[in-house]
Image (cartoon, rainbow, N blue to C red):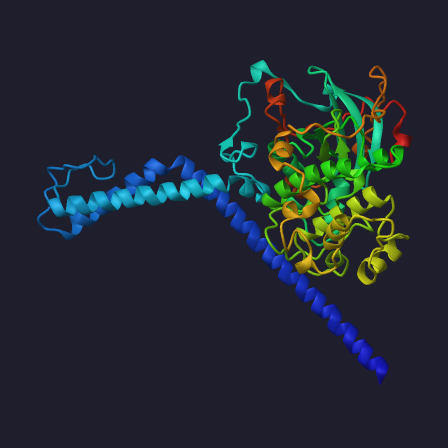
Length: 508
């Protein structure tokens, strides 16, 4: 009898999960349609304001001509109209009413245009298929930047533009290389991602949408508005690979920095935490949830300031509580609501922020163990604060590591107003006027710039990616304003296989 009940419960649970997946797919399709509608409306607003006002005036004139017998078409005290060749004479009251109506239309039109202008950055992060007349690279929230159209003064940006020196790191979808561009002679980090892996991961999750697999490219275009995010210089792609060209964090990541520096004093940790807060709040204000914040994804620049990086798992257009229940992140940093696959919000990033601060202050993990043990401890156990004598710091960490999302600091209460930051002048932090107290250390990216290594393209020998999947990468390439003075982007190019030279066996 018990086995039958368990079998029925299992079938019910499975059907319930399928229904939830279908509901989520319908909601995502609705959101995607609304985002495209916003972009279309923005383009219409930009191009057709005068035509709309004129056509609205024309419609009223035609109504007057058809419904009033005393209309004199031979005279028209108003504007000319291309639709109606004649002229219309209206009584003085009707003219006053007509002018008032036109004024109201212009006022409402301008209000709508202003609203779209203010929300432009949010629209850009959410767009899935870009409209040809909508700018997608932003300089400030109120001013768009257009790429240079005169390609005679710039050169095309391709893979051959870069000289690769060494491997900086590897990930699930590709690797990060240290490189130098040919003209500007800048050292950059190039993230090389396999398109097949992105498409495969998206199909496994049951979703295959542009904003899902290319979220990092979208965030890199917006990162120039915040000095605490890793800026994207360019994105280009070939038949099988996606290349994200980013600025180089010359000081390495916080994880390696913590290993080289045994202890950090509290003022230094507060400075690092304050800059992280500025970067996180910028992302959240743009509807971006990072979902993979950890010490290895926080870089230090050569002047020892903080840069948040690796937006591959970022969730876009996430304002307030999201409906996503995807289990993503690094074990030990995921919030309880993410582990249990409940709906979550930006509060999950604040939990990961608390884990990072705990490791920086106490030099240990709040939930030690392997991946499974960490998940269990996050759900069932409270971290210990032995050795921490400052009650303000303990209160700050305990509120960030709260298991209940609604009571967690960041979701409930403002992080900047906590006593932990009582000595921080936020205006100086945001403008960069505060000198970094982080002590210099050996640069982790020192290498011989004359050293060159080949980058193999074994994907070129596989079956071509279907056109339907390849269309997801249309118009993803961009060049930032600074690099736009030297380079211009090009459409998708075929993979280069001349640089392989027998090294294909090194490529997995």
